[in-house]
Every structure is written in structure tokens, then in C-alpha cells.
Image 1 (cartoon, protein in one colour):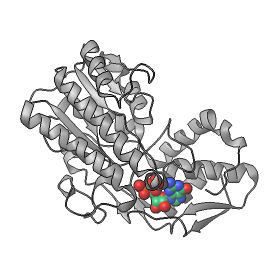
Image 2 (cartoon, helix red, strand yellow):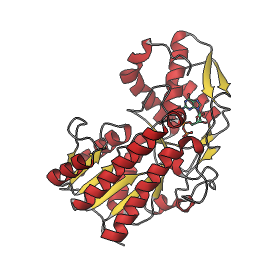
Image 3 (cartoon, rainbow, N blue to C red):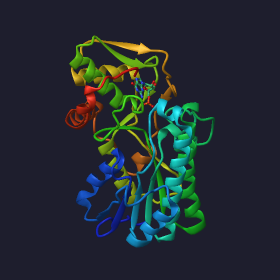
Image 4 (tube, rainbow, N blue to C red):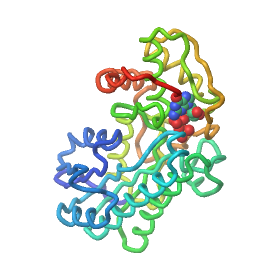
Length: 323
Ligand code: GDP
């Protein structure tokens, strides 16, 4: 057993601190006694190698959380393959290589459960990675994220860097993207249910058949797991982060309707894709490392809806169009 990596007194850089995940990690680090470093977008372009190298050489963090990525839902991935592949490759390669050069002691890279094979055994163990063909709609993002995990392993093997990877399941929470064309399912359904309720519409449009199963992790829980892993884990294999339970999109839509107080019916739209039939992580490794999710879905949905009402619902004077 290696000694715990203490964060107290360390300089910790959160790349992607404005995103849903990065901002949750920043909030979670508040009580850890470390110095949190962040770089504004106009100060540092993560897609530019020289900028990233200069930033790391100047600021010399002890630890790095790689929470920067181009993310999006099922339609966004399908519509922008080049952006999802190129931007994610550049961001992670630049940060990981420059962290090695700057002598970063510990780095946590975040993958995503959607990069496992489309027909992986369920729940998906860490060993399922690269054992089968990817889901075609998000293969571009998946290939880039798999490269990020491999970069951490490669720098560990060749240069002895203590770089680790974690594989979060589908995330949701404050700071999520509520754009109906590019968002994931939870923010999309919260917003659609809210609009249906406020506009007096009697149905909620849900993409696909409603039968796919998904696992959802509240982002504050994810941040807590990331901080736990950076302290206690120093292995080559990525670690799944999830709740260990899933539900159908239909059941999710019912929970969202309850959260929002929408009392109309749910209408499925089979012209939209279902994506992977099921996505549930095997979280036994994480469990054995001493961490478990604590936020029930209904609580997380209520807190996310409250955030949306406070921050994002102002944009909703526009129409929701074809989504
Ligand atoms: P995925 O987990 O990578 O497939 O990403 P998403 O969160 O975009 O989609 C999860 C599931 O929810 C898919 O089966 C979608 O078809 C379904 N879904 C139902 N309604 C919506 C919606 O309004 N937006 C999105 N993004 N997905 C939806």
C-alpha cells in the first residue's frame, strides 16, 4: 500500500474549472487546505501546446485534475465528430505531456463510461475497455478519451509519473448544459418538463423508446470521489466512478416530471436515437478503495432543477423548437 497523497499545502490545478465537473471539484477542494489554481480561457488555450507548457512551467502545480473536455449528448457527438475527436485529443495530450515536463506529482484524468464497448457486459468492469466495438454515435469522443487513459498509463510506465484515470458514469448537477440540442438527457428533460409545465403543454417529449437504461451520478458525489482517488489510489488501471444502480429513461422521465411538478403525459419520439441499450458501471474497485455515492437521484434532480431555475431558465423565453 503506497502512502496517501496529502493535498494539504499543495498547489492543485483544476483544468476545466468552469465546467460542471471542474467547478464541483473546485468547491469540493475548499476544505482541503490546498491552493487551488485555475486559468481563465483567455489566459490559457488548452488546445495550444506551447500555452499549456508555459502555464505549467510558470505555475508548477503539485497535482492536476484534468476536468477539461469537449462534452455533449448523443446528437452533438454525431453532428460534430471532428470537434469531439480533435479538441479532446489536443487538450489531454497537452496537459498530460506538460504535466510530466513540469514534474507534477499526481494527476487525475477523467474518462467517461460511454467509452466502453457498446455491448460490454453489464455492469461494466474496468477490464471491459477495448474489448469490443464502440457505440458509433460517440466513437469520436470515445477514441479521444481512451487515448487519454492510455497516455496516463504510458507516462507512468515510461517516466514513472503517478498519473491515474477515473471513469465516471453519466453525470448531472449544477452547471450542467441545458441546451436541448447538445445536452445530456437529465438537463434536457428537466428543461422540457419545466417548459411544458409553464406553457401548459400536456406532453413531455422523450427521445427514443424510453427503454435504454442509464446510471446517473450527481456531480458533487463525483467531485468527492475524485478527491478521494487522488489521495488514495496510485495504480495503472482506471477506476469506475458510479452509483452501481441504473434505471430506464422512461422511469427517469417519470422522476423528472415529479421533480418539476409536470402532470401531463410522456410522449416517446422514435425518430431520435436510443444509443447504447444499457450503461451501468461495476463499482466494486471503487468500493474496495473506500468510497460510495451518497446522493439519491431524487435529491440530485431537485437540486439540479433548483439550479436551473435560478441560473438557466432565463434563456427560456426562446422556443424549444424541434427538440
Ligand atoms: P448517452 O448516455 O451517451 O446516450 O447520452 P444522452 O444523455 O444524450 O442520452 C441518454 C438516453 O436518453 C438516450 O437513450 C437518449 O435517446 C435518451 N433521451 C431521451 N430524451 C432525451 C433528450 O431530450 N435529450 C437527450 N440528450 N437524450 C434523451
